[in-house]
Image (cartoon, rainbow, N blue to C red; front, side):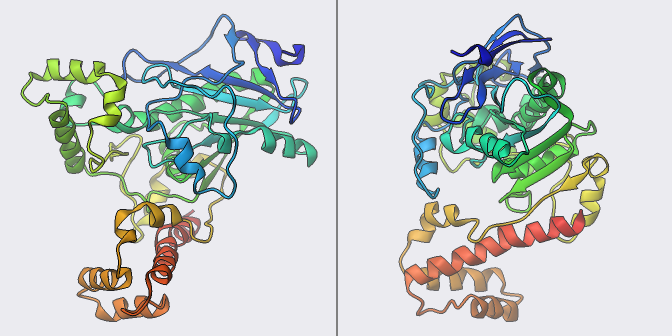
Length: 407
């Protein structure tokens, strides 16, 4: 431990971090930004502390234990996991963040806060692909130093289960989105003590994190200055309807055998179920994600009304800049993980599905098939490639252009 990795924070007390010999940066890991009373409770900002040991990664939230390995299959190069990667998860103590600084001598640095993706079901801030050390080092080399922060937020059932019953007992929807907001409030309150400028914060997110980044523009409180949604938007993954959320809730209580219990007892059981059961007993078909609640998610965005919907977002008035774009084959992960994409005679199956879906628009269906070169004779590998390109254009490229135009 180097002395350069320890300092006195005005609100958090003595903070001990870790100097990275490989990059020269200093990291403060696993800093809790909130305390939870139970897995569904609202996150409450930690205002002060009497010292913080930030020398190792904090616990991740509940998500599939093989999430890191499955994500690494889809990036360009497999990265080694940190030797001190957490071995257990927590539904109560997993809300923490990592702060990476060039050094402790810098002041008033720009701040980049990152929200990881993972379909609102998986991901953690300790994953090596989300480590800010190399990027912060790169900023120093380019004489553009900044502070990098990556956060955990509740996923799956603790993050997004909702129903009228839960709301009647005081539990609000979209815990995961609300957690992110509290993390941004932590940055506003505490990042100055690390040498950061709270008035110069950029929020960046990838995939589900990009969707979250746009949802954070629903806040009436200006918590960042710029937004960078990467490879995702609410037009890619639309929020669930209240009807779908209720159906998911019924499926969950059925999976745990709680349907016949009185509401109060049922909720008590949901709050205290062993964390491992949250991953093993809920059918994969049960949808879990953001729902329109009029607060964190104001409404479901659509192409036809996007300009008006963006203008109604409070952040459109206080967020200075939006950087949004897309990459080639942005949705390739869906192409290679969705079971229907692995079927034989893929082109024929897609043609049948498309013509049925666009039965009122046969000319449009034909134009799409011609544009992407999909015919009944298209072999499966070529069909998979064409469908990935088509899906990326519809789900990533077109939304990015639409948000840029609306902004």
